[in-house]
Image (cartoon, rainbow, N blue to C red):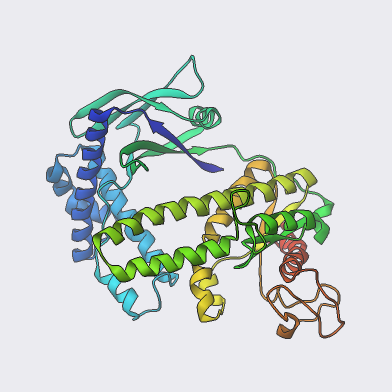
Amino acid sequence: MKQVVQVRLEADAAQLDVLARTLAACNDTANLLSTIAHRERVFRGRDLRAITYAQAREHAGLGAQVAQSCIRKVADSYATLRTNLRNGRYGKRGSPRRRRVEATPIRFRTLAAQPFDDRCLSWTHDTATNHAGVVSIWTIEGRLKNLRFIGEPGQIAMLRAYRCGETDLIIRRRRGGGLAAYLIATVDLPDPPVRTGAHLDTSAGWIGVDLGIENIAVTSDRPLARELMATYGACAPDGAAGRGSVKDRRTRVRELRQKLQAKNTKSAKRLLRKRARKEARFAADVNHQISKRIVAEAERTGRGIAVEELTGIRERVRLRKPQRATHASWAFAQLGVFLTYKAARAGVPIIAVDPAYTSQRCTTCGSIDKRNRTSQTQFVCRACGYTAEHADILGADNIAHRAPTTWAQSTAPSAA
């Protein structure tokens, strides 16, 4: 199981300046290579290296290994772009947005992350402490040695034992206006055994998770569902003691963003960038809290987790125009990733089920009718008269109902 670990570099002003100029040189080189790749229509790593390696070395005086890393970064970026285009991330073929993306070379920010392999960045962990160490890293002014890093002890322990692959150097702007440098490394943890048992053959052995607009996540577990709805849903209290409705906050943020975009001044653009970072942190924080709570409950009760299959949700779901921006603005995919890695780390089975008609199906008689959903919160079956306590909880029940079948199919031995 792969996981990402982040540590902070305790760099002084001079060291931070060298690191920032190193990132700028790497990304300026990457922009040059991206322009060549786009013009020549050469995107595969080996082919791109054959026509750009000399320029990558000469352009900003990069070392051989760092130049190779820049080439791989450009090739990987175009591979990601091709995948996004194929999946419809930028609209249908021939749409104005897609044509604009296809006609423009990929650009890298001045302080965008740059990968370094072990020949360019080496680690030394402290023997006396469990939360720090030093690194030696290549820069445009030579090797920067004995650069101290610090991190959370649990993360450092994983880094010490299971680090693998390249390490990314990234510099972020801090709230006070200064800069801070971080190293982001991948650790390859041993996979814990996933708990199995006969209880997974019934819906009672699963916690269904329904994702939505009014309530970010609702579960088939009633106490947990009420807790999530009361903390993050439409009924969440405002004020210092409560976070308020996540949906209402997203609506206020979207309206402010529209006003700032309409102004189109330098100060408005600066504020937009600042608020974008703030909202990304808020979304990640909420997603971490929700996923942590769901996985903890599943681990405590020995159940599995069943979530909606999110692939293609933007194209699959039909919404009224006022709901589209709200639905598309939340990081549901990020929540799915958090649930997946937290569940894997705890040994909790997790599967994705087909969400079709889960909001319209009656859990009592199995009748499916879109008229059963009389409002956002109410569900009344037109066939048997069953009334659900909350329509979102009923959707989570239906997801849990489909989990045993999906689980049996995923664990069935291959015919080969």
